[in-house]
Image (cartoon, rainbow over all chains, first blue to last red; front, side, top):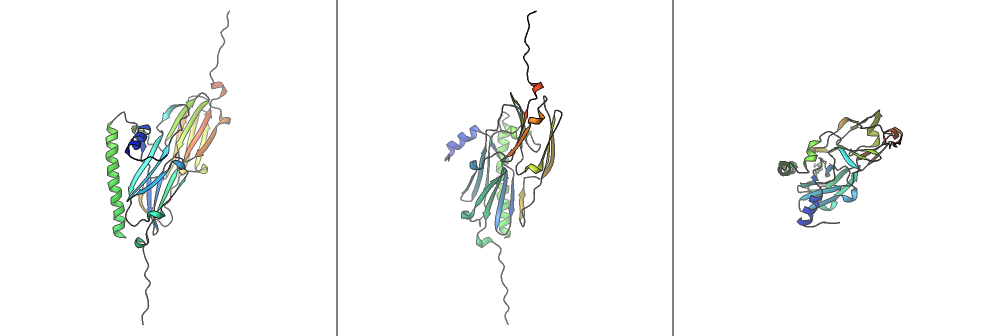
Length: 124
Length: 148
């Protein structure tokens, strides 16, 4: 179910606490790569959204209670994090994959910020 | 490219500061549910549940495969060990690394004997679930009262 507006966001937050997942950020010539640990989140609960220059990632973990809790600090939560994306990312080329509770978001660079090799011509 | 990199760094500094402020505000409220995330810092984060049939251990092990994990049961002590190797993707530079590679071992003393033969472990979505059924001798027993 898609939520929109502050009201439903607040309702959702009231149900589950929010957790900021640990994130790695890598870069190469072609892309920025964001990697986030979201254990227990099903891939169908993942939202990756780019709004203007903000990248928003979120997912939900729920339903892993099995009886009475004896010990431990894990609990249902909503993973959520927002990044400001620098200029030079192609918004149409963004892709994301989820595997073993790890989310990877690929942010390809636009051609104008990629490093370019300039051919040196020999002039006689 | 120089300006591009520092943009990214500034972005994170600003977002981190914002997040710290929110967390401080939330942590000030002692009844907050966010506290639960702050207290248990050992990796992997685990929980133990109990129902009529036995115990369930749940551990957050994102990115790990079966071969990275080792589970052993010795009497009533369950040991979860393993290694999380994290490598920088080929040809990439690192801007930020909050995820950690680690070698870990955690031990859990179980409150009663479990049936080792019926133990099962499953890895799904980066979560390890270990089912530890109660041993028959640990099941509650009804004693009939005889009239003498």
